[in-house]
Length: 77
Ligand SMILES: [Zn+2]
Image (tube, rainbow, N blue to C red; front, side, top):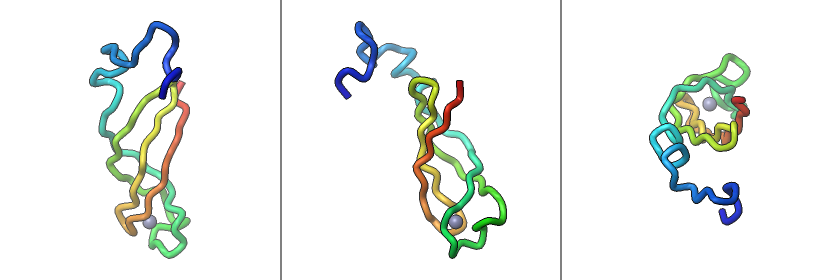
């Protein structure tokens, strides 16, 4: 991840490495597993570990119904 942070920023600063950088939340996502009961029914809520970087949230969402996972990137501005 060298060069990932702006010059003079190590990534260890509180704002980056602190408690606000990663947290758990509940997110509803569509399951893309066509064998899943929830496929094209509705978004499914699951608890995810969110990592925030440069106004983008990254998290792995796991369908609680079928166990399929998706890697999600979401701009949060
Ligand atoms: Zn599913």
